[in-house]
Image (cartoon, rainbow over all chains, first blue to last red; front, side, top):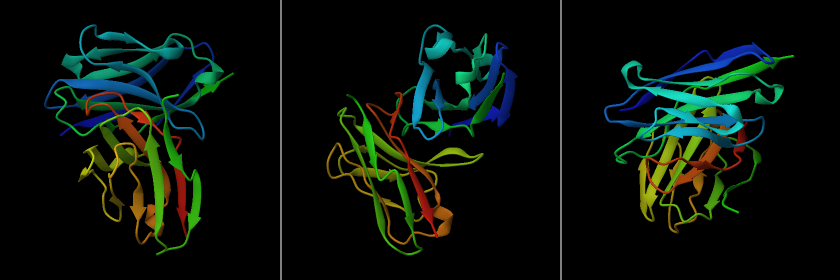
Length: 115
Length: 112
């Protein structure tokens, strides 16, 4: 079975500050990992994904995440927060051997950006 | 434009009145799934389908039904809705189980 834990249901940063959203996963097989963003009253939009290869992945809007197998982590970062980054962020995992049934999500982290 | 379309976006209904939320995708994806989103719980999978006529339970299937008679459509049926099914529902599709999922805009359901 797979699971995802997002540390911190709410994170608040000042505009221009570093954004760090934490995600830890468990998986019995090599995982594929994803970060999604949800803006108010909208569906989920893919930010970035890790499948195989380079462990540092870059996504849209200046976000990036690093897959650390030894720490079972996939934390999301952005060097400088913008007001437009305020949203809810979800980390998700799927089975890299494609034997699974789509994504398992974490509980989400709501990012607030203060002027 | 590649998309997943859900209808309706908003629905208020009464306990026990059967309802259907439709979902359609135009990407020829094999996999489709329904999730419900509740505060603090993230998205939890209700049912999924790996192909036409192949469906299976997710983590929270009680009180829901699905069918997959055509590849593009995957309706969610609540035969006797109850207030604990008040939630935000998302339909998603992907070309394989491990791949990124594409989501609809969501259906906010209130059962009174």
